[in-house]
Amino acid sequence: DELSSWIQQSFKHYVTQEAKQHFNDYDKDGDGLVSWKEYNMQMYDRVIDFDENTVLEDQEEESFRQLHLKEKKRFEKANRDDVPDLNVDEFVAFEHPEEVEYMTDFVIQEALEEHDKDGDGFVSLEEFLGDYRRDPTAREDPEWILVEKDRFVNDYDKDNDGKLDPQELLSWIVPNNQGIAQEEALHLIEEMDLNDDKKLSEAEILKNQDLFLNSEATDYGRQLHDERFYHEEL
Image (cartoon, rainbow, N blue to C red; front, side, top):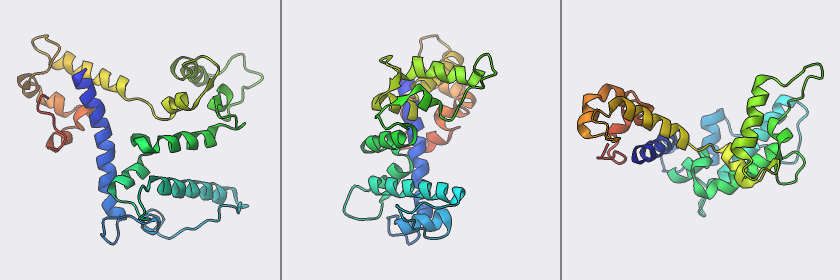
């Protein structure tokens, strides 16, 4: 459990560190803040300002307008103080809102806006499957649809009411890394636990350091060079 928890934390650490590294690319004037203008210049090489109420005739341009407006809304939501620009922690929240607690409501609302077509505050199976329409000449649904239906029923719809409420929706939009972490932890212990005590000692890690360094759990070794995150028991 301890190794699994550490791996879960390492997954989150990778994401936030990557966003922090990107921060410097966006902070053009080096003032420790990223403005909406700086974000646009880095991302699109120009400052873009779409009218929220003007729908564009060109379908491709309209899709981009919608995407850009969502980005602006997320940028504003990530901002937690009176300064209009984002500091590094706010920028992490902007880049990865699913990893930041105060952005949870925004993540849910954005998902509802995208998937809740009838506006009832839930996501039905049909809405979950998106634009899929069964071929009337087919005897059964394709394999990928059967897999998605099974996920909807058995993984997400916990109360079995045939629809996803906001919290159930969150489990779909923001997958829990727990299962992946447990699999990786079991794999490492199975391969490296020489005395079968279900733990990894320093000696066992050193003896199998190539395997440990090539694991996703350590970001292929890079994680171990981060003293702020490194856990001595590993």
